[in-house]
Length: 357
Image (cartoon, rainbow, N blue to C red; front, side, top):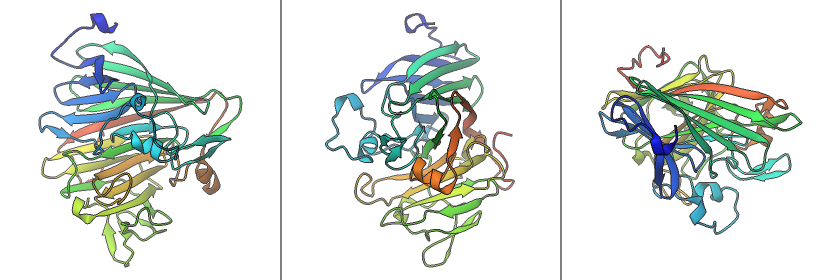
């Protein structure tokens, strides 16, 4: 059904693609529990995820918010700043180049590639009071990959289901880094939050991520403890407050299962994500707890990026090839991933179980 004749329900699940935010086409998907906003004209980014009964925003929002790439000309061609200038927070699907600027089969890629600042095609493929489904399709400008993102919401669920496909249209096999760039923040994240992940190995970044970094570089150990530079233990189950004034990168690997959960113990709600661990063998943990001095954060931001990824660490495809973690996609191959993400009530942190089981 087209926009002009769509059923305008006020009950059950609702979906509409008849909205624009700052000039960018936006899809609103909601039911009585949650409201989700997806920016079709900018990478199909999930820019907002609100839990209605507690009036809680779960997505991180940058201080500058959503910017329309059509309305601005970057003042320089720096490979990192072009992406960051338009980064509004939230959740991006990053393919084929997750990580910092690098060459990709001769193409010059900036940070996190090129699919997040372009418009994606949008189609509502199911629209009933019981279930709504929207399909988003984008194509990389500088690589032969198409990404399909099909997002569904059921009437009584407080989480979304995402079925994703990445297709290689090249007549050659290519390596990729596929990153689900999920940044949690908003009114949800606080020092009274706790992180739960399955049994895994913690790796810290090989060098300081920022001058405010506190973690010991090149640490490797079992969940839940990492080390600070002074040799003391850091319990990763505890989320620091913004007054921690730190920015660090860490990675979880050798995951026994594919999920994680962040619980706000004041609100008694949990943000959960489930993903296929055979494809996403790592979780990147971007710990931006009031640190990050200078461009672009200037010490203003507070977020936890918990980002399923095929590879590590954040140097892009070339680095992933060097450390053996790049994911190879055959000519014509379609990679598929099913992800669940959303709100879980009364989650038992003690049991450390998949929140969707």
